[in-house]
Length: 472
Image (tube, rainbow, N blue to C red; front, side, top):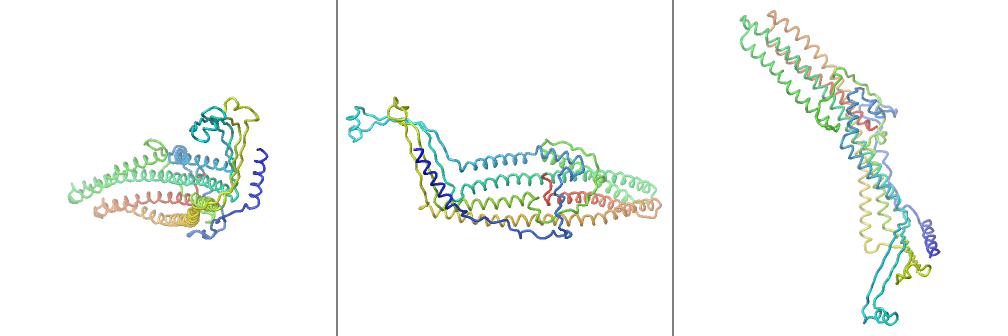
C-alpha cells in the first residue's frame, strides 16, 4: 500500500514538473497613470515630501497631538478597520494550507440485515448461519490536489493582497481622521477668535451708543441715530450665542472622532499664535503610490484581480487529485484489531476535466478578466483624484496667502478708520452713520480674517493628507 501511494505521488510530481506553467499573465500597474508634475508646483525631481513626516512631527500644537493620539487609539471606525485586518490575516494564513494534503480520521460501525430471499441473505444464512452483516473500520483518509496550473498559488497571492489591502484601508481612514481632528481643532480656535471679536465689538458699539445718546440729549442728533446704534450693538451681541453654540457643536464633533462622550476641549493656544508652515517639499506624482493608502489599495485591488483571473483560468484545465485510505477493517468486533490481518489500504489518482459545466467556468473566467480591466481603470481614477487633490491644495495654499495679505491691510485700514470716525464724530465733523458703518465693516473684516487663517491651516492639512501623510 505504502509503495503504491509513493508511486502515485512520484507520478503526480513528475506531471506537475513537466506541464506546470502560468496559465494567466498578470497585468502590471500602468506607469503612464502619473503626470510628470503637479499643477501649481515648481518642476522638481526631488522625491522628498512632507508626507514622509509622522503626524506627531507635522503638527506642532500639543493640543492637536493629544487629540489625534486619542483618536488613533480610541476611534471606533479605526478599531473596526483593525478587526478587518485580523480577519484578512486569518484568511491569508488559511490560504497557505492549500498545498497541504487534507487528512481525516474516521471510525465507522455498521450493521446490515439483507432480505432472506435475496442472494446475499441466502448465502449469508447458508455459509455463516447468521442473518445480518456487521462491519467495523477505523483509519485515516488523505486527499491532495497537485497545483499544476498555479491555482493554489494564485489563491495565496490574492489572499495576501487582500490582507495588505485591509491595512491600506485602515491607513486611508487614519489619514482622514488625523486631518479631520486637526481641522476641527483649527475651527474651534477660529470660533474662539470670532467670539472674542464679537465681544469686543459689542463693547465698542456700547461706547459709541453712549456718545450718541449724549449728543441726542444735547439735541445734536435725532432718536434715529440712537436706534440705529443700538441695533448695530444688538447685531454684534447676537453673534455671541451663535458662536458659543457652534463651539459646543465643534467640541462634540471632536469628541466623536476621539472616541469619547461630548465634553469641552482644552485650548492652550490662540489662533493668532499658530504660525503657518511653508510646505515646499511635495515630491513627485509617482510617489503617491507608495504614500497614499487609497492609491496603494487600488494597486493591490489589481493584484487581487490578477489572482482571480489565474484561479478561474486554472479551473478550465484538468485537475490532478490523489486520494488514499488506510486503517483497520473487520466484520466482527473480536477480530477488528487483529493485525496485520485487519489492515486495509486504497489509493486513487486521477485527472478531472470540466465537461458539462465548462461553459459556466469559462464565463467566470471572462468575468474575472473584465473585473481586472475595471481594476486598472479604478487605479487610474484613484491616481487622477489623488493628483487633483494635491493640485487643489497647492492652489489653495498659494491663493489664500495672497488673500490674507489684502485682508490684513483692509483690517488695519478699518481700525484706523474707526479711530478717525470716532474722533471726528465727537468733534461734530462726521455723521453717526459713518461711525456705525465703519464699525460694521471692521466686525465683518475681522471675522473674515479669523476664518481665512483657519482656511490656511486647513489647506496645509489638506495638502499633507493629499500627499499621503497622516498614517505613520
